[in-house]
Amino acid sequence: MQRKRTGLGGLAPLMKRYSPSATETWMTCPLKRHLSKGWQPRRTGKRELGAILGGAFAAGVSAWKTAEMLGQPLDAALYAEIAVGYARKELAALEQSGCAIGEYDRAQALALPGRAERAMHAIMAQDPLPKDWKVRDVERIFPEWGESRIDLGMDTPLGPVVVDWKTRLTQDAKWLPRDVERWRFSEQRFHYSCAYADFLQQPVYAFYILLVVLEPFRAHVIPFVNHPEELALWLQARQQTWADMEAEESGTRKIGMAAKHHDEYGPCEFQKACFESLLDPHLMEHEFAPRGVKV
Image (cartoon, rainbow, N blue to C red):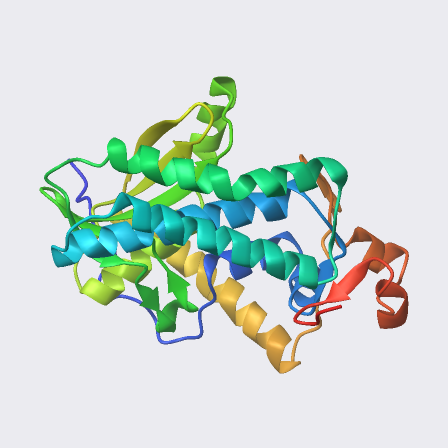
């Protein structure tokens, strides 16, 4: 018997929900989430620069797809300028935050606006999304789902879908299958599919990753068909997760610490805050800068 390929339109429980990034951070380590709301490491590098590049590209794509949705004339130079402006603004904010950028990463930072500009021209020259897909929503925010936001909601012949952009400077082909499996079971996939279905009050057929690799430029459209059983299982599990997160915020539950302090990318960025500074704010200021404070 074939399963219906649907989302969970209209079935969201009335409880506080948190965004995918907040939920993932909490599930990695509740204490890390608590610290990251008020502090950031003074030394910055590949992770932060990658986030800025992704944000710049998303800003340009958002302007492009909004114009497409509204039937306006398309202007590649304008969207590239938007991407460059975003990159420069975020790099300046990073400098003002008190975070130090190493010599190698500084060179990467200087190249970042140009990379964002070239990426916008390349993606518009060869849009990888099917021609019969129609843009329905651009950066739609769901207040009742932790202020989460999708990149694109689109109408397709098989029903509504969510499209999520991912950007990489380079991509070794041998690691792509590993990344695909991670995205298949990602918090973003389940959360955005459920949130958009709840918003539309109809099933969301699938979640798509659109992976854009900049050097050399190429784009991969990677589909994940949604099944109601797996979405329901995810949502059931998250109800307890979000209840625990809310209990910590209200003070009725103590903030826990993860058992592991390393992952495949290295040590947790707050490891020194816990085990060297012992969470003392005065000692932490040597390695961490308060968020929102310019120095």
